[in-house]
Amino acid sequence: MNILGINAYHGDASASLIQNGKLVAAVEEERFTRVKHWAGFPAQSIRYCLKVGGIAASDLHHVAVSFNPKANLNRKLLFTLQKRPSLQSLLDRFNKQSKSANLKQTLADACQCQPDDLRAPIHALEHHTTHLAGSFFVSPFAEAALLSVDGMGDFVSTLPGAGRGNQLEYFNRTYFPHSLGYLYNAITLYLGFPAYGDEYKVMGLAPYGEPEYLEAFRRIIYPKGDAFELNLDYFNHHEQGIAMNWESGAPSVAPFHSPELEKLLGPMRQPKAELTPKHQNIAASLQAVTEEILFHLLNRLHDRFPSENLCLAGGVAMNSVANGKITQHTPFRHLYIPPGAADNGTSFGAAFYVWHQILKQPRQFVLDGALWGSEFSDEDCLIALQAHNLHPKYWEREALLHQVVDALCEGKVVGWFQGRMEFGARALGNRSLLADPRREDMRDIINLKIKFREKFRPFAPSILEEYVGEYFEIDAPVPFMEKVFNVRPEVRAQIPAVTHVDGTGRLQSVSRQTNPLYWELINTFAQRTGIPLLLNTSLNENEPIVRTPEEAINCFLRTRMDALVLGSYYVDRSE
Image (cartoon, rainbow, N blue to C red; front, side):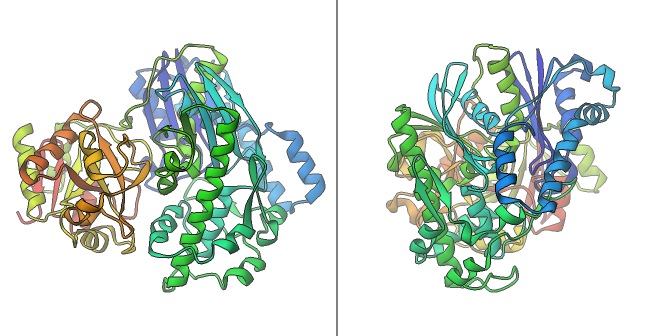
């Protein structure tokens, strides 16, 4: 049974394939197009999935897409009659609906076949139900409370629910124009971070400030019943829509706050302007109110479904700072957030929705790893290196580990390219830049010499899962770098490069079972230094994470990276 899942015509377009109830491939289109958060139809991702599955388009039994223009239609019509949104806003919605009507032809073009070859029914699924399916159905929990929170999908921003076995139950929806994700997006744009997906920059900036404007933000968003509301005086998206570009390319969003917001907080920052303490305090206040609303939603959800288990999804579930506080501020004790918790993950969420909800199949798969993308052999790596006239050294496995640790201990920054590529926004040890976490200057070195990005941006510690409790105040698995925990005060001085300004770290716990080679590398470093963790950031430079050996080499050559490992091959810049 082959089920293809698709996230299309939205940011982070992606495709996934499950066979007999198990995920076999998942990838974002940006990795092929080399445009961050690429929006459009994921044609290359679909072809990749079919190739990995060893099937043709005619072998598909079901196709599932993570949007349904007919969902919540009554609410859309009521809003249109009451609010009379702008003509452009209505045209944008009609454009997306018209694309969905031609889905079979577009899919056939992507699969390089005729529409008649596609015998699989195409299921158009409500956006947030695919978020919930893509968190609960792949979680280790038999039952759990569920929450999907993002900007907007199919006219809904928030959907709490419950999962039992292979069944989903939905509670109260929060409809357009009220959205926690929109609030974070609006303030991100107001703070002068214009690129789609820049919310994580604001999250990284927040620890440098104080929540001076928290009371102001409590006037902008506030709890209401089991949900929340925006004070629409501070926005214009409910009247004018949001100027978005979802065509094939980089998605973009225009600012959508009203003049009232600037009366409250001051003038909007221009993208190249100085970041002042005031901007840091606004970021801190936004983060604080986001956490307040999220914890309110979760506590009310627990009242309705008192489970110890929680599955979280949607763009707001990428807020790793808030995620790390959930077990302290709510009754939930166990938290599962999948890799690709944002819209990219709705591709496998849609596929699992069909498998469990429509086909009524029992659960048999747990998503405990993120390595579902492209893979290249040592031979592929050598050919790419030779094409650039590079002369690498070949090392057997154990010797390679020691060679890399030697380089790290010398203060070198090493590109690490191994196995299948990660799915989702985080590099988790297969397409990573690695460095010694003990060096206080390493954050600035990587930001300024390789990443060419803001100095305030933090880096993650990849830590052997056996040692999480020795270095962090919460001892829990964090396999997808999805939570921020407090670093224990007594060890902060040992790992300054991965300890953020507020004493926290966005960690990745590394399992010997799910990524044995990366675990062995960190363990080798631990045997040498006594520190069971490495500084890990993504192998890229103002682009999507590299997919191919060629892309990794190009990144190595145009930055000041010290060494690059491609499979078993090692290249040092000094040589």
